[in-house]
Amino acid sequence: MSKTATIELDGQKYTFPVIVGSENEVAIDIEKLRALTGAITIDPGYKNSGSCESKITFLDGEEGILRYRGYSIEELAEKATFLEVSFLLIFGELPTAAQLQQFEEDIRKYTLVNEEMKNIIDGFPKSAHPMGVLSSLTSALTAFNPKTVNVDNEKEMYEAVCKTMAKFIVIATWTYRKSMGYPLNYYDNTKGYVENFMRLMYELPTGPYQTDPVIVDALDKLFILHADHEQNCSTSTVRIVGSSHAGLFASISAGVSALWGPLHGGANQAVLEMLEQINADGGDVAKYVLKAKDKDDSFRLMGFGHRVYKNFDPRAKIIKKAADEVLAKLGVNDPLLAIAKQLEQVALEDDYFKARNLYPNVDFYSGIIYRALGIPTEMFTVMFAIGRLPGWIAQWKEMRVNKEPIGRPRQVYTGYPLRSFVDLEKR
Image (cartoon, rainbow, N blue to C red; front, side, top):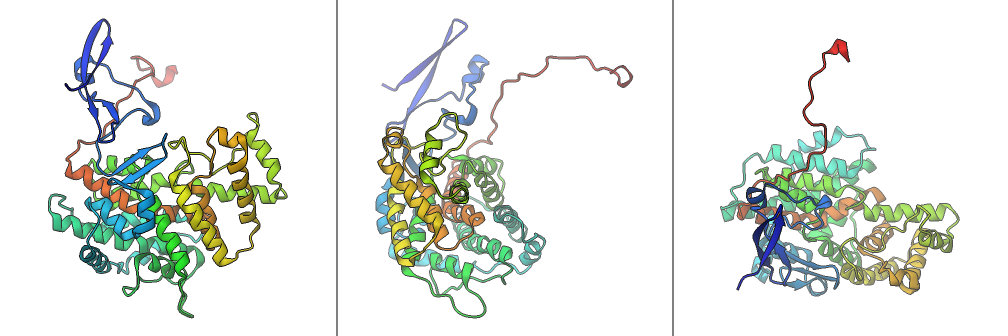
């Protein structure tokens, strides 16, 4: 017998179906609530509202579980590459060796970006934030690819996916090159996807750039860990923009803008800014730990705890190891990274932090890795966007294929009731 839920309003009872997910998540289906009762629900921040049914990502914050298409994040990070995970998220299954090779080859077909895009990026000052530039360039790709994608045509959808994966990584690195005053680089189709990222960022005309396998592996893992995270702010933005049948590039551009916020993708940038603040004040970690414990002090430790995970962030366990390997490999002597390691030790050993589950999260460790690699702080969120791209594509594709209705939240009006207009001379 299927489950139901009953709501009583003004003495009248209404019954609604209950949906149970494949991992026993329970949701009350209130699609017909307003039609039956004239009432709506109000849920600021949508903390208790499900906007869709999805087969892409499962997240259990209480148990510290994250899975893509049923595969644990731990196993994927250990055994898969970023492009394998991208294929899995977007198309539903892990690729065969032949499919993976074809996917990479098909991405390479579209890695050349139209030269006129340079005119657009030249219009930005060097001081422009890379995320603002990236959002604009992503949207501008629509002008060079004006054809609407028929989501019911597998060939068209596949080509759109490959084109987006190809061009996004190039224009993302162009935002850095612009800020540094370097000439813009092009994708090297003889090298891998993540390896190309490092070369696109750092290779100069004066000589070839040698990539380090340890660094490439760490970035590969970071991109995998960021690839999707259920219905977060930027992902739900991509879905709601796409629900109007806006194109893939326009929807991804909206996701970039949502990710830019410091409460979302900007969190790892906030970690480095916090470390800089502590360092500028003499580097006294104990002082700032006490400030963090003082409920009357406005200071907050960034990169600790998580809104969703009430346990240890499963992504943080994986990336901590990669961070240790990168620091050991590079032998970086950086006061900010030394402060970060002290804070990590306190958070893992101090009873105050353990009792409140304030463990270092993925933003804390990703910030450490990016800093060690010499990636500027303002580029951190761009790194996040590169990793999150396949998740955005997968969510957009799923929403369109499922023919979900246009997103249109309701509201409870709390303004003035009807008023009479007052003529200008009488105001």
